[in-house]
Length: 224
Image 1 (cartoon, rainbow, N blue to C red):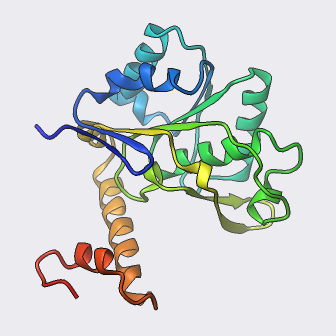
Image 2: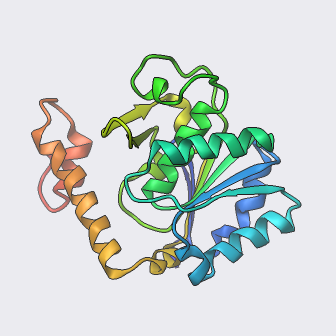
């Protein structure tokens, strides 16, 4: 069974049972957690219980923001920031796919900013400080579990923009392949389409000499 730890700089813990490392990893960065997740599938499959067992077993207080939808909304960010501030959390843990992770990232970025979080996204204000972030992945798709970006939709203005910052890399991401069984066939297929679209994007890049990306896209061809 494949099992490894990898730092890119996100610390990736890959393998079945890696959820057992959750408490130890969180304690490197914080002690009060905002738990961010989606519509409840993690409760049906038992992943939620495994996360809670690790938090409670390590005496880590947690506060929940649930119901994150695909194409995460600014409203969820605002609610998450409110919960985080009221409970003085010092760490954001997203459990799910790209939407939950992106929401957690923007909450972390907005926590210390006293204005409208949308200001950060439209570059009206700069990110000065962030809460540390960790993830437990349930869907392979966007790559948000190990990158420094997020995409959020403003329901009022109908705008969907991205935000990036070097400190938005998750401190760690737990990738247990068995957790991907928690999503439907349709979601899995959608994730594959997402991966393929990001890969195809490299073909339309005007950057010359991107040998690593070219090689990853064409694993059976000779290097360009």
